[in-house]
Image (cartoon, rainbow over all chains, first blue to last red; front, side, top):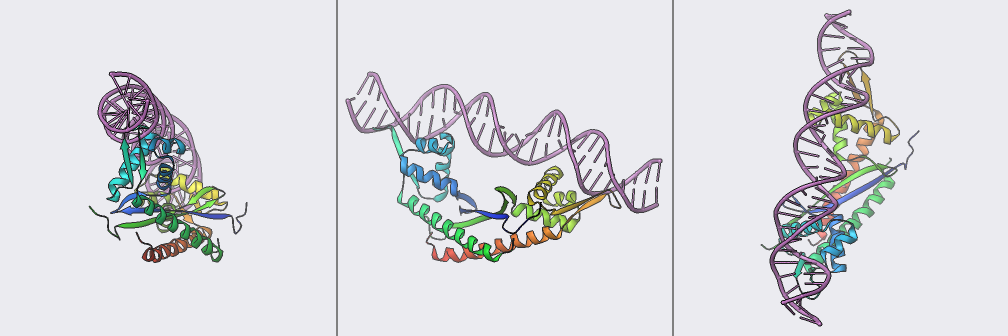
Length: 116
Length: 116
DNA sequence: TAGCGGTATTCATAAAAAAGCATAACGAAT
DNA sequence: ATTCGTTATGCTTTTTTATGAATACCGCTA
């Protein structure tokens, strides 16, 4: 089977780091968005098909590494509590998605000139 | 601890895919380059600190998915045999590294304008 | 023809990552 | 006080991934 031009596609990922530790990537941004939408870590985890435990650990790690709270959590209360994305968190999400989009456009443009 | 602008860095990876299967990324390109330099999979694996088994499997997978040989192998012979990167392989390496470099430059440029 | 070093392949084992389960703490509403 | 759904956490099990050992094959060289 002969390889023809256009047979190869390109994928990419970007991540935000704080002092060489991964802060977040596409998956965690999606988790943050779902927390924002659902109002709880457990509902967001369920929606993503991941274990609550893992989602909770991710949030914990993100809050620690960011040096600021990206997600605030409330214990007990009317509906048992919940979790909410802070303004800092929303800004980080926006920055990430903006960069991701621009990189995607750049790569698409580059591919036209690259002979693969 | 307050988060200051510039506290966050960005990392990225790009991959070449053929029909939604990963063909290669930064690690495999490095392996190819080492094979080209050393003339054998086993020496390249040792230099990368990975098992021969894994390196061999990666080469196998790349050759299959590329639809063309990126690495040719020779059994037996003067020094027991060896492995060599084909012209196709070299071109793919070059394309990958060129794209990777351009993306790095683009992201660096973008970060100046992005407020994170 | 015996030896050398690399490719090719299987099998069992180890290490690491993810998932699953169970349970306590919490606090507003009733 | 009871109920409720969530956060929070430890412990066990499962799954995935990587590693290591062992073996056969290959072809040049001495």
